[in-house]
Length: 81
Image 1 (spheres, helix red, strand yellow):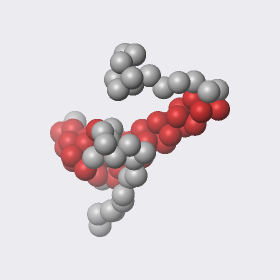
Image 2 (cartoon, one colour):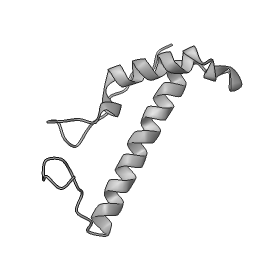
Image 3 (spheres, rainbow, N blue to C red):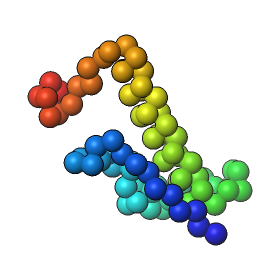
């Protein structure tokens, strides 16, 4: 059983690489190559989805924190980095 999900990104212009299907495929392959799934007896594609969703949740939380504290997010587009 394969779980399908869509990850919405706030910027459609230049989405983060963690939101792409290719990232999850490569992560699944990496987890499988190192037999990471053996410790929890969880299929590697489920672990890859969990990691991808965790990264998205962390990104969303830090973005919300920045909004709360009115921190300007530094990006390549505004030539600050």
